[in-house]
Length: 176
Image (tube, rainbow, N blue to C red):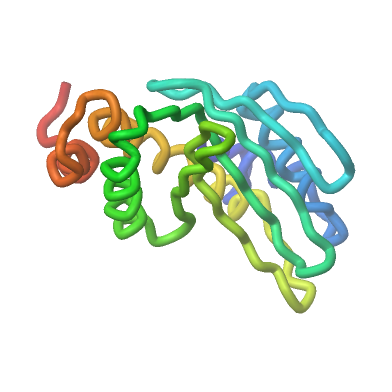
């Protein structure tokens, strides 16, 4: 997901932007175009995208808040666990969150969604560059891909949370 380098130390996205007045959502829109993701610029301060993964298509929304100078990312996917497996899902969510240094998972039961949330605070006039926003998106995507099988095993595979999370923790060795 990281941008291709096209000039001395510059990614393709960075070459389009030479101004410090660039809105963070403009950068996100350019990244979406670069990665060929479906997107909709909902408002000046908000964009929604669909990002295809190995396990599913994720819905991604990024919104800029001038009030608290924060770029918020919400990546969601459907998750409607059987009622008796909700405690197991929550246990796996807690274990996954212990492994995430940035962002966190939560379950929005009323909407039947699993959510990965991340906020980039840019207070004091700090600016986010394309590489930083691309990393934010990449981290969210990789965490959803990494932990999705564990969530499925805990809810539908009826695995114990400790066993389910091992799928995401186990490192792959060797080459395919």
